[in-house]
Image (cartoon, rainbow, N blue to C red; front, side):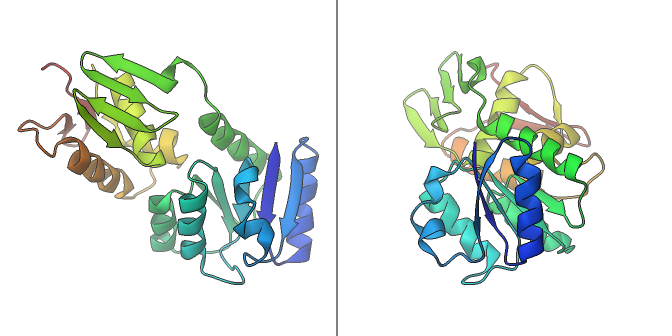
Amino acid sequence: MEVLIIEDEELTANYLRSILEAENFTVSLSDNVDNNLCKKFIHLFDLLVFDLNLHGMTALDFVRNARKNSPDIPIIIVSDETKTRTKIELLNLGVDDYIAKPFDKHELIARIKTVLRRSLNVSFEQHIEYGDLAFSLKDRILRLGKKIIHLTRTEAQVFKLLVLNHDQVVSISDLLIKVWNMTPGFQSNIVEVTINRLRKKIDKKNKERLIKNIHGSGYFLDLSK
């Protein structure tokens, strides 16, 4: 697996590289986001790990550009930034995980492997059909009858959980843990924001909402009609 680490602190960069190389990852280092490695070759990597303090552009802009040029690359931020608002903004943009410094190397590896498992999942869950609904996780395309809907990476992960559990309520806690890898009890409106984006795409011409919520419990996908 090819990993790109963007970190301007040499000691931290080398420490991260030693941890990942010990797990048989192939690691490339960059101390800024302006060089060709980040601009032209980011799509060649299997994982992107970086700090928020980037030379060349803000972390938010870099995530936007990375998602535009390589929408499927897993992104993990390792930073000492503690502001919840910043974390939520980045997660909403498509960051897969946020790990606070200082970190435990065993937790770091465990969370990296969790993100990669989600990214590289090639099981039957990649393509799901139910009645006139067809969903491709790999392409992030949802077909409802003749309507074709393109989903973002995060929207697709949320929708997969809802459709696989369409006969039961998926709790907000489960969504936070399985999609965003957040710990139980984390307070965030990120699930509500993502569900609302999905509803705008899916329910444009539908009188009834496909994604319904049970107050205080979670959400479920109503495929009874």
